[in-house]
Each structure stands twice: as structure tokens, then as C-alpha cells.
Length: 306
Image (tube, rainbow, N blue to C red):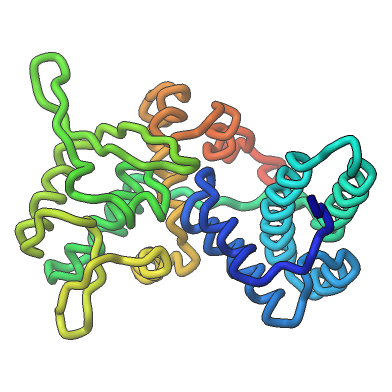
């Protein structure tokens, strides 16, 4: 059986990315975009030298997405080549695997240095943010969208993909609690209990928008027409627009998820529970969400006679 690598057509690489079950849809879109742009520029996914030269002109994040996409793609090809190995073609198999290794190492990325200034909102700022939403159809949609991020800790794609059937009631100590069945990153589902206030907001939105099934968050046209769903970029714009209204034009959806974790931690919720609610695989990931390492109460600047 022939084990020689041949130049693959664009649909092959994009199909591998699209079928990756361990990736969130937003991540797949970034990987696919990086590969498509490279191929549109005349690139060959099996030319390590060409890959390296092209990647030098990208931003660090652009290089990272392309590198990850190439690894995903070539890992699958490498697994297929290994499966075809026989005593007769073992040398050819080894040569091709070395070539795949060279492709995966062609793109060099730099690890971020220093400490990024993350954004957390206080309870007062969260209230101010939600108060920027009016009582119109768009305003009610925006308020619920912000709530799913900051009061349920959902990722952007988790919020946009949440459906009315994902909202459930579960008995807790003799009373019913509303929970969200969240379809998380890497196909990991989790249950997120929510407050009565957020549950009521979902009910009110359903009544106002006259929808009881399908995705909860919908786009709304300028004419007030409700569409089927709200995109991830649409949700990002909702957050930025309302963030700008409270003096935080760079506010991002992940900042609200980070705020959810911080407010819970400050209220005494155990970090292990916060980690579970966020869908993190380890508590160390959750710790990076919290303002733990930096003491903002007392800092060196306080002691400098400026």
C-alpha cells in the first residue's frame, strides 16, 4: 500500500477540523480560518519551509492557530500511515513520519510573557452593566445574554448554543432548583444551577419573544424581527457595546465568566465547586481566573514617595 504523502486538497484539511469532536465550535472556526487563509495564499500543507516562511508574517495568535490546525491534521495522517505499516514498507513509513514531525515543528510560536491585566467586575459594576439594557426586545435579549455569562459562568459558545430544552428543574432539599444542562468544551456536559432571578429572566424572555423551543439567544433585526440564533461574534458585540456604556469598551465575554468565578469566590463558594461549575479539568485552571496571586490591597507603589 502506498504510504507516500501527497499534496492534500483544501476540503480534506477542513473536514478533519470540522470532525474533531474534542474541539469547541469556536475553536474549529479559528483553526479552519487559519488553514483556509494559508491555502488561499497558495500554501502547501506538506511544505515545511513554506509553512515556516508564511507563519513569520502572522501575529502570534495567528501562528498559534495555524500550528495547532496543522498538528491536528498531520496527527490524523500520521495515525493512518502507522496503521499501514508492514515489514516491507517500514522505511517509507518512518520517512513520512519524520516529514510530519518537520511540518509540526515548522511554525514557531512565542509563549506570552509577563502577567496579563485581566478584567473583573464588582457587584456594583455588574448591576450597572445590566442596567444599561432597556425594556425593548433587544434590551431584554441583551440582558439575558449578559446574565448567562456573568450569572451562570458560560463560555461564549455555550451561551449561544443553549436551548430551552437545556433549562431543567431538579429537586434540592424539598424544593425545585432551575439548572442548565450545558454542553461544554471537549464534549463535556455539566449541570449549572442558576438563581431564581436568572431563571425568571429566561421565562420572561420566552414570553416576550414568543419562543419556547430552539436556541434561547436570538439575533434581532433592526426592524425588530427575531432570527433563529445569535452568533458568537454577535454575543461579543453585545458585551462590548454594553461594556462601553459603563466605561469598559474592551470588556469581553470571558471577562464576565471570570467575574462569575471571582464573585463566587469572594462570597465563600469553595474553589473546587467553582471549578466544577466552570467545567474546568483542574483547579489550577480556575485559580488563573481568580484575583489570587496579586495583592491589590497593598502594593509596592503604596510605599514609594511619589
